[in-house]
Length: 342
Image (cartoon, rainbow, N blue to C red):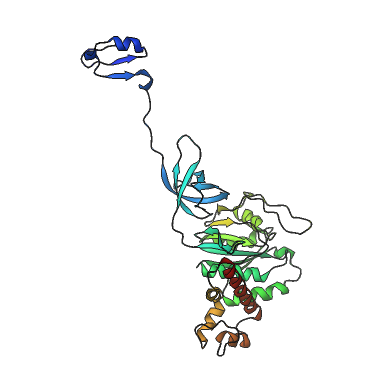
C-alpha cells in the first residue's frame, strides 16, 4: 500500500488494509488492475463496395483499397455484387457488419420460382452477354439479356467466344450481323487467342460490367485472359452435357489491369428479366420501340392491331421475324410471372 502526501493516491490489492485507513486520507483511490487499461477506440464505420458474395458473407472493398469479410445484419438485407453498403467494424472480431445497402443506380434481376424479382448484381454500366460456338447459342436467352440491359439503362454488348472452334462461321455471322445492324457492339474473340481480346479490353475499361450467359460459354476463361492471370478457377467440362461446372462462389468483381471492373456470374440454362408489367417489354427491344412510334394506337401490343407500325416494319424487313418472335415469347413469360406473383 502506498500513500502520498497532498493529494492522496492509494494503490492496493489488500482490501483489509484499505478499510483500516482514516476516511480523510482517501480522497482518491485507484484500483491497481485499472492503472494501465488502454482507451477504448470506437469501431470504424464506412462505406464499402461488395466485391464478392458467399451466401450471407461478403467480401468488401474499403475506401483505402483493402478488403475485409463482412456479414449481414439481420435477415432483411440482401446485398449483391456491386452494391455500395454501410459497414462497421466489430470489436474483437475479424468480420465487419453490413448494416445498410445504399441507394442503387440499377439492378440486374430475374424472377425466382415464385415470380418475384431476384437481384443478381447492382450498379452496372454494362451487361456483356457471352455466347460461343459451343454450347449451341440460344439467341432467345441473348435477346432477354439485351432486354434487361436496355431496361436498366446499362450498355449492352455481345461477346462471341471460341471463334477458334467455329467450323461454319456463316451460321453465326448472319445472326450477329442482325444485332450489329440494330446497334449492339459485337466482339469476336477466343480465350486461347489473347490478341483477339484487345478491342474488348478497350471497351470494358470504361465500365463496371457483368459477364452473363449460358453455362460452358467460357466466361471465366475470358476474364482470366483479360486479367493476365488465373485469378479464378475455371470449371471442368462435363463430358455428358459439354457444359462448364462453375467453380467460383456466387459472384465476384475483379479489376481489369487496363481499367474497368467485371463481375463473373454463374452460368444459366435459361434467363428472363424481372419485368414489372407487359407494357414494359417492348422498351427492351430497341427496334420495336422505335417502330412503335408509328402505331395508330398508343397501347398497341403489336399483335393483330390495325395500323401497327411494328408489323409494318416486319413486313419491310426492318425488324427480323426472329427478334419479333423473341419479343412475343418474353411478353408471354412476363404475363405468366405477373399472374404467378399475384
